[in-house]
Image (cartoon, rainbow, N blue to C red; front, side, top):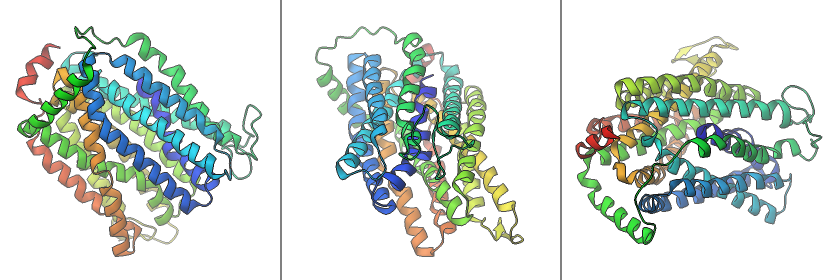
Amino acid sequence: MFDWANQPYNILLLTFIFAPYFTSFVAPDPVSGQAMWGWMLAISGILTAICAPVLGAIADASGHKRRWILFWSALYVAGAWALWWATPGADSATILFVLVAFAIGMVGLEYGVLFTNSVLPTLGPRAQWGRISGTGWAIGYLGGLIALFIMLALLAENETGTTLIGIAPILGLDAALREGTRAVGPFTALWYLVFVIPFFLWVKEPPIARQTTGAVLRGLRDLGASLRALPRRKSLFSYLGASMIYRDALNGIYAFGGIYAAGVLGWSIIQIGIFGILAAAVGAVGCWLGGKLDSRLGPKPVIMACIIILIGVCVVIVSTDRSMVLFQPVAAGSGLPDLVFYICGAAIGAAGGSLQAASRTMLVRQADPARMTEGFGLYALSGKVLSFVAPALVALATTATGSQRLGVTPLIGLFVLGLVLLVWVKSEGEPEFQCVSSSS
């Protein structure tokens, strides 16, 4: 239910509704809006990367993760709710307020996920971690899908002042002031407040016999020891490196998929929205099935299979445009390229979601059970360190070739490199932690 509760921040605010609204209607112009949005995401990402391992170590030392999650939840809700004040054509002070509010909510989201992931080993025996993680991710996709449909059907207005189903925004919201679209902030906050309740009611943190006195110094000392020992823990070290690279490639697909569809295939916003809905729906099913395979086979085969599928998707994308499919020419006006890209969207949803869910399970197997939040902090740090590489390589390849289609080629290389680094990752994790994890 935590995955269900927090997913709208990604789908509604970060991807499909608020981000395009901000750059198109709140900022002075789309170019400066995109630049401001990019800097805001970069700064919030840096804050997350720098502080995540430290906060994780402190939380492990103090033994009170639920209190931390409650604090991050407050940031999430406050940041999301404040987006209501993102009025069209806002002045510079309001724009700065909105960007800071979004960053606060984004930090709350990232840290909330980090701390909640660290609770995963306590929810069931080792053999069930994959199923629990995959099911959680599937439920999150489903929640995001339903939230997106509600927003498009009942609240978010288009240029004519009506929603996707042809009605005015509900609750008497003024379409001329884009109140239906601006309601995405309070809607996301309320969604989280309601649906996170089962998590706090029924997910119990096991009692830990630790004193909070001196937790900060103890946590920092433990983090230093973990970082010094990291090169000797070859499996964890290799996994952090591999996941850092293939997660960056996956984020590149998410970031440029819609841009590619619009620029190369000429898709409308409605078609891109359908693409997103399809990816989320298939992704929910894929995560559920991937979780079952994870519990049966372990996370490593699932991760490798998902990467291979995504490599195939990238090859198809590079070889498809309006004039060809898999480098084979098609008739003018053919709908085959659209059909192929919709299939690619379904594959991205299924493989991408399963990859993230299995990656979460793999980290649980690799990390020290007594330092689980710190482990996810290192995982978050590794995910941010090279987060600029995929966008930079895509931009460089696009500039060098003058082609959006060929511009996504570097993502193939990143996926391949991540796949190669997985060779040194032990599926069961470090030997000294296997018996401890199994008994838990």
